[in-house]
Length: 224
Image (tube, rainbow, N blue to C red; front, side, top):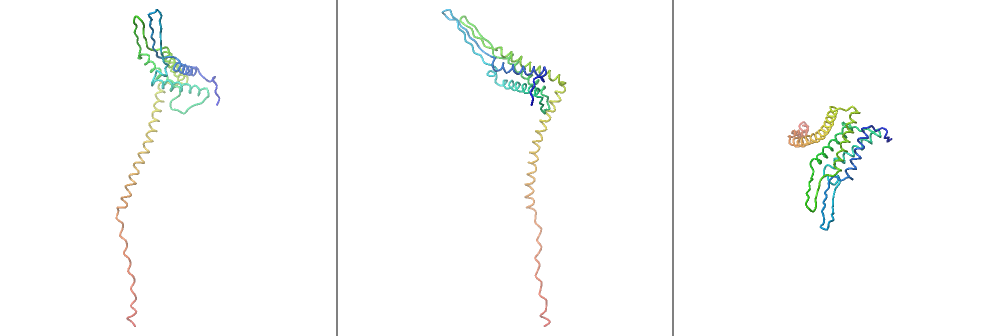
């Protein structure tokens, strides 16, 4: 298997760069934090702050972001290695879909996240989002845009996406139905077999033939 980065298209560079950036923003940059500062009676001041990255602050969304990163990098690696997968949905469509879902979930956290603060004469306290949250959203948009460019380069339209999604759902439904049909047919056959045995044993057996009587001796004694 030969790995050549010269085979990568502009869309692949966009997807790969967005995935690497999202990984860095998710694990290294701070997404949420709090800070407090106060003035001392002696005239000095002190401040304290605490923050967490995206991986530790997101409970369920982090798994979607991690899946998006893995799939995006895997698709880019397959293009560089000229490898293809047998799937009813094209890889570019999968990447674009995951990028869209990730962007929606991160945007929701941008719109609705704990934030606030207060200040008094001696100090202040603030908590809210950090720069990592917004950079993560930009990285998700980069993956989404790269997947959309790959779809255009491959000539995939929105109608093709609906058709591919329908085939994927249909193949999943057919496999589930075939698995259930085998179990039901087996269950239907066994009761029939079990009921036939008692019927056969309960049927009356044909009457046995009567035993033949022994032959009579010839009447030889009368002539003597």
